[in-house]
Length: 407
Ligand SMILES: [Zn+2]
Image (cartoon, rainbow, N blue to C red):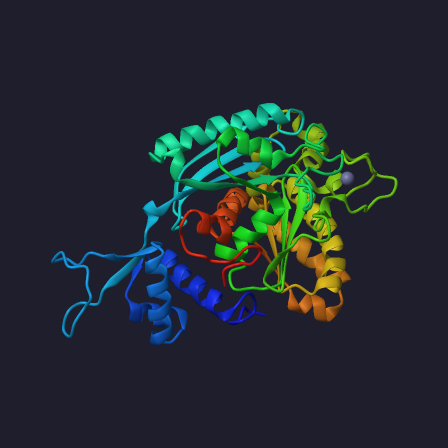
């Protein structure tokens, strides 16, 4: 199913989103270009443009002769663009073993980005401090004043309680019970929106990646942790308390290895990067990295390919059940392991075809994400840039997209 006008929010809000989205993709466009690109009538486009101009989110591009419009008969049409200087957003992604920080303007252009390898799980304070330092660095590099930052999105590899904003469960021992968003907000001096990393990866792939235009998508993040982000009916689905999509802690082997969540035989204990590296240790030693594993797969190493394929099958077996429950149009595979390509995707596809209902298996396309390991940080940016209330408080357009995705 693709998104049709009216799928979410009011029609007027959706029309605003379509116009802003077209400008994000094309940079500049005339009113008639916008009508063509969005499928909206010229009258509707004119009304939406007037509204957005009034709020300072889009501006007219100066014509070559210096006039800004309006265009009369015979003159070139007035070109419109998003006013990037209206603000900026920060995105912060905490993986289990890295922190990635990016700053983008409101036209979604990433201006600067930093990546740091770091043991995140065991020391929340240090990880938060490191993120604040990286944020200062990207703002300096992009020459963005902190006062222009309208907010930061934060991705974290653990379940977030939607009611209290605290990090739940025992998955991240040093973060459990922490108001992680508030902690980062203190350090960055901007409002912070916190969400699970797989959820934000899903948001990014559906907004501008492999799931563009799809309303029902399961995004699977396969890295040192394993999680899923669910987009259902065009919206990110969090569940009653924020646990939805904890794919990595579905038990697949009752007598299996003990997982960091405290349970046994979770999917994460057999299909995460750590589990795969441990299995390859007898052949390749303790110093093999994820990059090294991917190079082995690339180079045709039979054991590495078999291992990746088996990991795909194990994940696919669990996803097959999810396909029966949710009937998604696509399974999008992201995270570090997605770079393994066909060896992984084939394993997932085979298990989904074998174990899901034929109708559910036929409906779902299994494919790699296109945003790679940047999906989560891009989703963190998206959650700020598309947030209505934040834009409104910054004096910008009331684009109410909270929880919804751009079609
Ligand atoms: Zn577990």
